[in-house]
Length: 129
Image 1 (cartoon, rainbow, N blue to C red):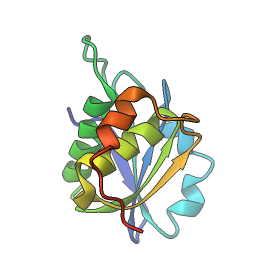
Image 2 (image 1 turned 30 degrees about the horizontal axis):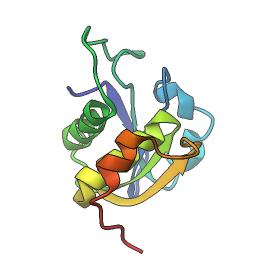
Image 3 (image 1 turned 90 degrees about the vertical axis):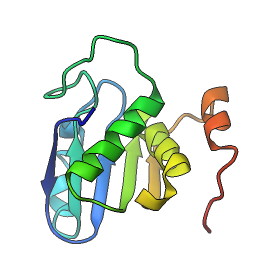
Image 4 (image 1 turned 45 degrees about the vertical axis):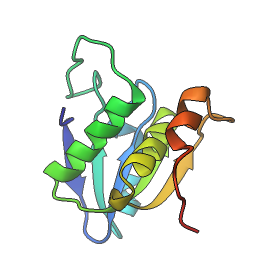
């Protein structure tokens, strides 16, 4: 699924991933400053704002696939990722599964300890220093 998204600004690509039950408006207080230096991709995850709820259960893996689909639709081959809360977990999963898409990753307010699912998804990763 390609979530509803918008691209604002010029410069290196930056993908902003909101947390649980949040949408692209989460970033409204910072996007003005960020878009002066970065080409920002803001998106609405499934079931928020302009992206419909698919009506079926979905996982953090599905949300990571959605972020990759939005990046592809916006013609972003690689970007810095910033994720908040659940968006932080989605960013980590995307980095683990598709490292070629991620330059740097910032996890804001992630879970204090990865749950079994996230630990399993990232165990086989090789992290750049």
